[in-house]
Image 1: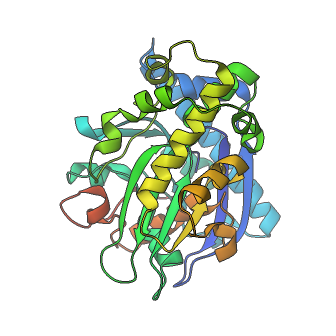
Image 2: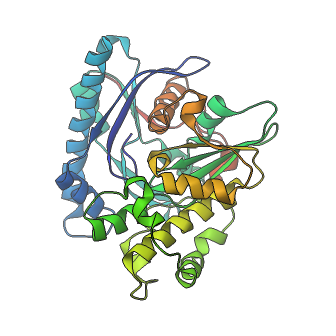
Image 3: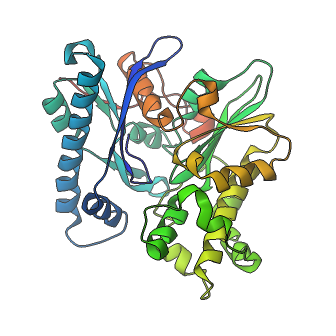
Length: 349
């Protein structure tokens, strides 16, 4: 998995039995030149076909290197692995136009790793009229659903998404708004760093109610599920159009409040919130979400047996196993697809 935050490659070795279990894991960070090139692909630019293909090949090499290191560190052989589930790097997500694009050259990855690859998970759901995202809710339900407690799972990635896990009935899930993407963008511009450590810069800033009001006027927030989004919407241009020369630290504080409120609104009614993704390391953000959900425990997925940085990678390993068994991977109630679908294209070893 390499997600919207563009921080690097997360790889897990998953025992995809009835109770999925992570056996080993690693993280390979992206170097800054690669990160900048990938980020640039999220917006229109020159020679996109060549750039997309070239970066897809480079990602395949990075993914293969991660797989090789993971096998060596765990004492496993490629022959023991049934498949690699490769989400790829999203560079465009436009379900409103009938497409989504995740690059990573799965054929090259299969060739380099000598292991079958399952990739392109989102396309079939979109072909069936769905959003193609989020796809993790089925995995969240397998791991975190409880027979006597209504729960919500929030993934604080570049985009924040929430899965509602009722005691009984339908699992629901949707993207609720920006997670880390705007916070990271603003920290990079004004701190020269990839992110705001522990949210400390934001925590020392002053909330700007007028700016928050303009940000929350975005129609996406009021739209009913199913819905999904990405950097196609929440990007530098979107933010710049709503700024009025405010003090930078106050802007960061307001962006943190925006993310916290989006998440808290989506989690209302849950008796417990389980958080995963890189945003769990933002102490100020986690505290603010908990304050908005007064009396509701907001805790890391680590308290439930899975490191928060590994949940998404584990989800796509699990989805790959579903694909190989011709089992549906989407939840139509979440994505809006016409029904359950087997997801992913299989590239034999």
